[in-house]
Image (tube, rainbow, N blue to C red; front, top):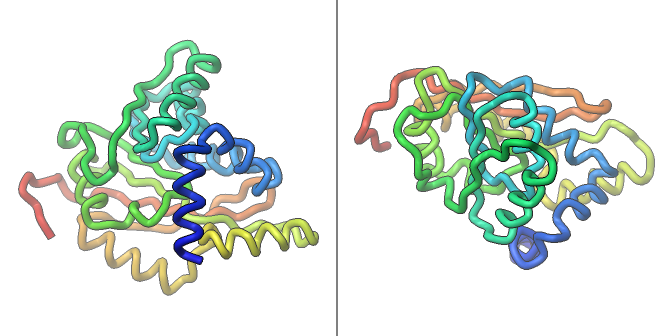
Amino acid sequence: MNWFLRTFFHLLYHSFAWSYDLVASVVSDGRWKDWVRSVLPLIKGKDVLELGSGTGTLQVALIEAGYFTLGIDQSRQMMRIAKSNLGRMVAQPGILMRGWAQELPFADASMDTIVATFPSGYITRPSTLLSCRRVLRHGGRLVVLLGVNIADDSFKKRLLRGLYLITRQTLPPQSVLEKLRVKMRDFGFTADFVSVTCQQDVLTVMVATADWPYQPGFIM
């Protein structure tokens, strides 16, 4: 199953990136974009970096809200689609680039918020956390939309909950969140977990604050 999921998501993010928005809409019953935009009230400051910017849904919302925003994604196909979408939807497109969260090509202490929605396992790798900590300003935030609990108890929604369980997009259990809280502390973050209601669905978002100034050469 793990091999199947890795293969499926790799194809969806790369060769079949053109179908991403359609697939996301179908498997969320049309709620995906609203879920993604639900993190906006948790954004802090002016300069915002999105990890895994995908087809640009959150980038559009950030620009419309007045943020200076950058998006980074490792998929060339996603980058092309996102640039096309931003070119059609906003007057001043944000800056999009291809890259990896583990090696962010930005200056130390240059961002107020780093945000990721429904990311894969890369988000909690030590290299990712170190890279994010370096780029965030003191007091900045790493905002991560971790999962969703669909409220409706209809047959269709029960099927969707089963699908999210398989794809690991359900809400993490409390024990996992507590382990993540401890891990984030080791990398210079104070992590809180926030419940956000969106169309009666409940989203769990990690808001991790960089609680001391970044020190060059810091290694765990």
